[in-house]
Image (cartoon, rainbow, N blue to C red; front, top):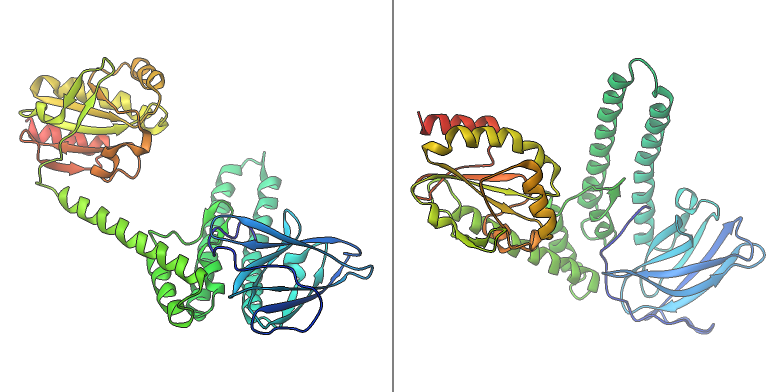
Amino acid sequence: MRKLLFFSIISALFAACSNGRFDSETEFELKGYFENAENLQILFEELTTSNLVPLDTITADANGHFTFRSTTASPGFFILRIDRSNFVTLLLEPGQKVSIEGDGKDLPKTYKVKGSPGSDLLAELNMGLHAGYNSVDSLADVFREIQGEPDFLQRRQQIDLAYTRIFEQQQQFVKNFIGEHPQSLASIIALYQFFGNQVLLKETEHFEYFEKLSESLSEVYPDNKHVLDLKRRVNELKRTEGQRLAVEKSLAIGNEAPEIVLTDPDGSRIALSSLRGKVVLLDFWAAWCNPCRVAHPRLKEIYNRYRQQGFEIYAISLDRNREQWVQGIKEDNINWIQVSDLRFWNSPVVNLYNVEAIPYNILLDREGRILAKGLNMNQLEEFLSEIFR
């Protein structure tokens, strides 16, 4: 599996054991046979909350067989790795005697596991995702073949649509997997799957899957660190979403916009409230933001058309480099009010106004009340033509 996997648990009490009596309360045993793995060293790792921890090195014999035994206090995620891209993820529990077979040249596509229901589910998840990867590889082959063809652009659009369908199918696959296995720790891995460079389930957009899985796993594994970590994340998301909704409520149309007092490039502090009596556009941008810069010529036209009638722009930059900010202002030849605290996305105004992406704007009336949010240039011009008619 690719990029599995940022979230699981803190290291489960883990130490190598000598051969001897098997303790089903604390130990697990792993026996394997990999083709094309004669005398090969296999790295055994633990997948923790924040990183991947090397634990031991297993050496296969001259026939590709190996036996490994160790301890774990509770179920955990572990990885058998031959190289960077050739590895499998296992869900191992105390008392399990697990066997695994596969081709050492391509473990993800060939391995089979017995004696570990959780690991078997991870294999199912892995195979389902690889089906999508194979489809994308086929699209990539077609893309290479059609480059230079007269109808390249049209066929590329078809390929893009096909990729989107595959992504949506993979997304539905992991949703179904979680729904079918709500009491398996394997579903935690499904939560954090990537497809290419895109995460399949976003915490904010698919929060119900995170929350429901946390609730169902807490019933079965109330003290498991994997589950406690998921529960912590869910609670953090709830708090963050609660705060966002509270801010959004305060930013409702008709409400007074929160005060901002920031510094312009010359070092003078300018308060938003000092512009009362004018219709003001709060414009969130940055010199490094290309879409923001592209919008400036049209915004300049609108500003020059209405400024004499009482229209002003209060531009808040999310830059973090003063020279870059000032250079952007100069290059775009913009002459409305510019302020910034040069704190990038850490600026307090980001949370104060729930700014999630830029460019973003909010239009205020002469009393500082919110008229509209997130306007494109056509919409902005329509509002202003109505106000200043």
